[in-house]
Amino acid sequence: SNQKQTHGFQAEVSRLLNLMIHSLYSNREIFLRELISNASDACDKLRFMSLDNPSLSEASGEPVITLSVDKENGTLSITDNGIGMDEAEVIENLGTIARSGTETFLASLSGDQKKDSQLIGQFGVGFYSAFIVADKVAVESRKAGTDVDAGVRWESDGEGEFTVEAVNRDHVGTSVILHLRDDAKEFLDPFKLRQVVNQYSDHVAFPIRMSTLGDADDAPTEETLNSATALWQRPRNDVSDEEYQSLYRHISHDFQDAMSWSHNKVEGKLEYTSLLYVPARAPFDLYHRDANRGLKLYVQRVFIMDDAEQFLPQYLRFIKGVVDAPNLPLNVSRELLQDYGPVKTIRSALTKRVLQMLKKLGNDKDKYPAFWSQFGQVLKEGIGEDPDNREAIAALLRFASSHEGQGLTSLDDYLERKPADQEKIYYLLADTASAARQSPHLEVFRKKGIEVLLLSDPVDEWMISYLDSYKDVKLVNAARGELNLDEHTESQEDSALVARLKASLAEEVETVRATRRLVDSPSCLVLAEDQLGPQMRRMLEAAGQ
Ligand code: ADP
Ligand code: MG
Image (tube, rainbow, N blue to C red; front, top):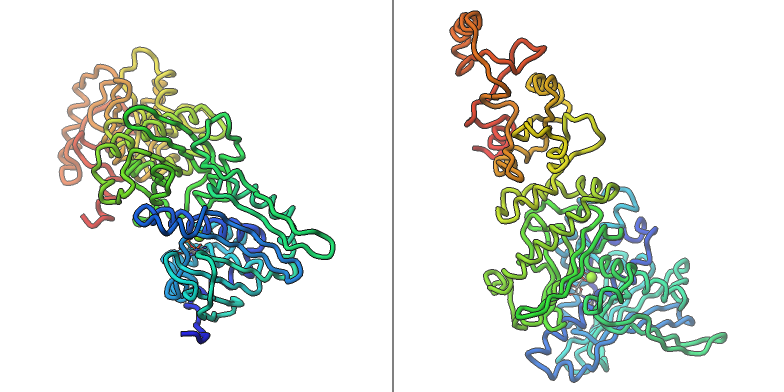
């Protein structure tokens, strides 16, 4: 219909808008990154659809994103010639239906402005960031493959309602028109726009143009702001750190720089390029079962999908990045990726690549502890899940230790300190590292100067059950079974005492043994070789078993 309809925002959307406007002020230039990112996604989608239907891209021309500045009217518009939206899509995407992430987003807010603003975008709430700088936003769109009269115009002041009406629109694609707030007029300044595009959007693979209408002081101008080539296709030494970081921020919606990255091109029968990043901190949903994870997949430089999970194992789900595999079929689907031979080959190569990158990071005394505190727990899952790479993952583990040193230790450091005649690596499981330090089981080790690793993470007992040796040295639980630290024969007195204790404790324990384990404490409880430890027992109880 040609009539203007008014709709109410879905309740969560209203809350979100309120939050954006009032508290996400400190990073407000992100609105531009979000809108350019949507424009770029729209161009990606059109290119993808044109694979089946070439007339679509023929009609709309080379993809381009245009920032138009109108100083007189105080508006900034972001226009693309991408896929566009029809009326139903506009209503659904920009207002009535809370996007899946919205509720989780609201639940995750900390009240700390800076932190909260960093969450935006991770949830697919990017479009609404327009209201940080605009007191009125209009969206005009026309879907690819439709006629001039199929245009639609959406408009809102962000106060709870929006309107939708049919309009004529000459070109396919979308314009987002921002009526800038008085205190956001700096975004009419070409210098400012150049700087923000440079910082956040330089990697975008389509040209971003800026055009100013001109006013009494200035003549109209046109310029291209970015280099517009897929960054991962360029040779490594051609790409600056800042460019790598800019792409990272786009892919991850992170504000912080990546900690490290690895960019590789593999040639030969199965050709592919990968660019993999280690973030500096864990996303809020690292442990959510249905969280988005995986790499951005491109085939022949055409964007195919986000979150392609098949290219890395679960325990590396924190890695962000791009894989561009020109030999995969363009119509590849998630189902096909699942057990497609070439994908498995790439996955196993990328896994090794990431483990190598982490090994290198392990030598960085500043960065690695930070990495470990964010992602160490997840990495431990790999010990159980990935037998092929177990030793490489084990080399990345860090433990508290009875050794009086600073910080955590690796298994390699342990082996280096270990006297040549010590045949095993000892560890102790406890609820906390300090509980482990006080454990009577440690006494004899301490006395003999034998180092013991102190494991207190809930997953440690599960993990260590998969790690029975490292570099051919057995790992042994210091609290279990026979120790054989040295030969021990029971004396006559011992046997008499043991017999009496056995009799009186028959209900409580399986057996009583004399030991040289203890130095200061008179007795301690020991688990039999095949018994579940306390952490494991608690985990199983918690799981209802
Ligand atoms: P996300 O990009 O994470 O999906 P946004 O809030 O940024 O979340 O955008 C919401 C949705 O609105 C997008 O998924 C897309 O369907 C639609 N959209 C936004 N901007 C455009 C655009 N320029 N062209 C086409 N569709 C768009
Ligand atoms: Mg978006």
